[in-house]
Amino acid sequence: MGMTFAQKVLAAKAGLESVEVSQIVELEPDFCLSHDNTAAIAKTFKKIGVDRVKNPERFVIVLDHTVPAAQEKYAINHKEIREFVEAQGIKNFFDMGVGICHQVLTEKGFALPGKLILGSDSHTTTYGALGAFAAGVGRSEMAVLYATSKIWLKTPASFQLIVNGTLQPGVTAKDLILRIIGDIGADGALYKSVEFSGEAISAMDISSRMVLANMAVEMGAKNGYIAADEKTFAYVKDRAVVDFDPVYPDLDADYEEVMEWDASELTPQVAKPHTVDNVVSVEELAGMAIHQCLLGTCTNGRLEDLREAAAILEGRKVHPKTRLLILPASQEILMQAMEDGTMQKLVGAGGVLLNPGCGPCLGAHQGVLAPGEKCLSTANRNFQGRMGSRDAEIYLASAATVAASAVEGVVTDPRRFLK
Amino acid sequence: MSGTIWKYGDDVNTDVIFAGKYTYQPMEPKEMAEHAMEDLDPEFAGKVASGDFVVAGLNFGCGSSREQAATCLKAAGVKAVIARSFSRIFFRNAINLGLPVIELKEGIDEMKAGDPLDIDFTKGIVHHAGRELAFPALPPEVLAILEAGGLIPFTRKRLGVD
Image (cartoon, rainbow over all chains, first blue to last red; front, side):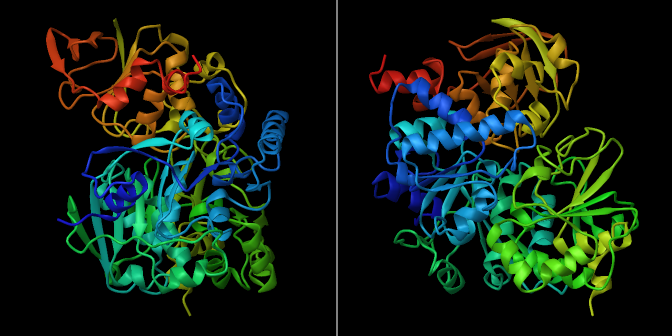
């Protein structure tokens, strides 16, 4: 019997011929990410009693969650991180404004095929879009990684999610992943490694693949994986910081479950409060008033998303009864969107441009909601209270659905705006 | 150890256990405990007693990797979290902080808020309403971390710092 992607990467990193499902291995990740939680991790690191971070070149630190500091406590947090980074000689440090950590690690060439990447952030799964094994961990274990470079991981069983067919105009990777999560549930892939494949996945650009891997964690998965192909190699060609060897599952690998979807039949989808698996078609919610629209985040803040929204918002205005926040995933994306005119269209329509970062998505910074308000967001979570008031509601959708709804002030099917 | 039950449903996420607005503020565990479960059960933090248990359904601790979700429960006095299943990062965080997490496939439905409960960790048995519910032992690699009181004391011992 062959091995799945997860088995192959974990076996290779542990220096073993093979690993069985549920086998616990100790290994050294290629890269580790932490962000605004680095100050807390640094404090825990000090408790270990080791003076220096081992292999500082393997650690990447990005300030993105509460930037720029909106209050003194955040400012102190950032200051402690900058001091730690300097004292420990951590070169891969990206201060506020460069972007959201998952976009930054991808753009700066750390997210590479076959690499093992761990981050003290649950959406670390994003790098699976480029063929990496990437998973979230906690703060204490990141502190131990600083000290030892080592961690234990259990080998997950794997699901194969096959998506054939073609996504129709106005239907995106976001609609697909919401439908998948709606079908299998918020714990449907608990602790599993999920491998996405099929015609519709091969046809996707890297930006769309990142949406799938990003939200793999929302069905409980340990990691999401998409096999590296020519598109992947083209993307990483001038970005990769180190050499890499792609890892592919064996053809006779053993999957716990194999599930299939037909992209051709899919329509725009929305996840209703307060769980990501509470998914219905946009049609079912059409006409519901929305007070705030959020376009951006690590899920849908890339140039492709901004363009998709701009195509709808160009020459139109954000409805006076709603407001549109624009949160590009990185400075690189923001620059591109300014160069090609996308940002002029979005801001021209009345959108409010925020600096690249995470802020509103987790209610830590800017764009929070009042009791009774409804937000339609391109982010990945709609948990109660996540964006401010626990009496507010968060709905998740694609960039196209958010843009169409911003124009109308109510939930709107973006296919109405197709030329 | 014995205490009473705080009962919740499926998919209790780490945002409702410990809100994002506090996540990036430097805070001691005692202060974190004051915000525990704020967006799920605003009464919890004020009324939970040392030795109590949190009992929930499927996928407990899903969502964000924030370790404070485990820290705040432990600091509030919660002696163990019992659930039908756990989200993997919360599970790791709890072990790493020395907070026992017990996966029970049966018997959760019968557990009601306020019920007394007792856990025998040596024998791996939860005592509730006259029933004995066995739970599986953790893998030895993981149990060693919990028994050391968490990942940091475990690592100090391993590195010979202590």
